[in-house]
Image 1 (tube, rainbow, N blue to C red):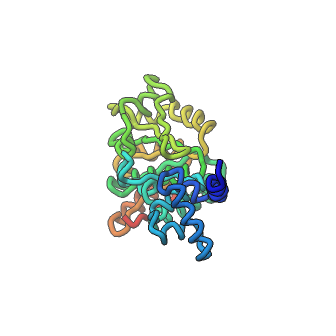
Image 2: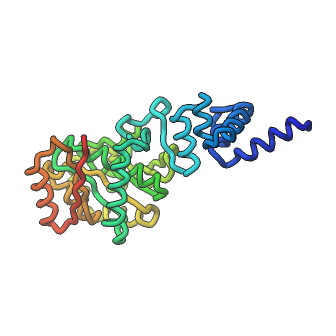
Image 3: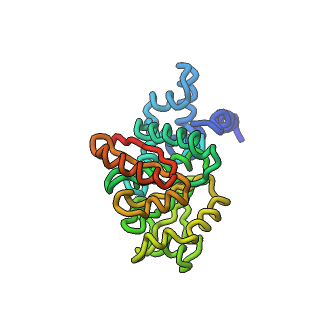
Length: 288
């Protein structure tokens, strides 16, 4: 081994476990690039990532991706993912919209999960009030926090979570509740740490009666032993009593509303219909 090779090893060692090391592993820079960046970094008293960008070796997207690995905060790039673009928490975790989701996550932790609850239902007064996307994105940000998170599509009338995550819906919650499937149908999302999804499954002729069975209570108890956070997406509150049934079993409900779209009277009606059953209710206002 000659002196030059030894110097290269020493140089790269200083990059190890840093943004530079990650950029090397990602194939964004070469060993020679790393040497130039380190020299420029020292001359300009800059961070490695800033120096790499200044020299034109990497983009801000490359830096953000490396940071996500460094801090165990996984996210995806839209051109390489098969998920719905509506899952902004997976694609654009540094946006203002996702920052609002993280703020909501913090509120739920302090107001709900720290009280000992493991599950919460997420619904809306009517269709198209953002409940499904809110549930999916909240599940993602909870998993990014390191919480073992399970997203359950309990909307047995018009399920959508399998579409958002591009999953099979041959078997799911409805099949587990009637004993045609086991909890093995829960799908771990490999590209997002700590996130699992249970799709709705076959559309039953009696969703209300199915959700009202003790089987759902038993299932939630089983899941509570394996997950830190369980999010159940339900059908709209004013469309049927499905949402109230699920929310009662979960212990509480977060009602999604869209700014300049959801009618106040509808939100109030949904709120009162849940509160009258002793269900703890939270309201989430989305920009839409």
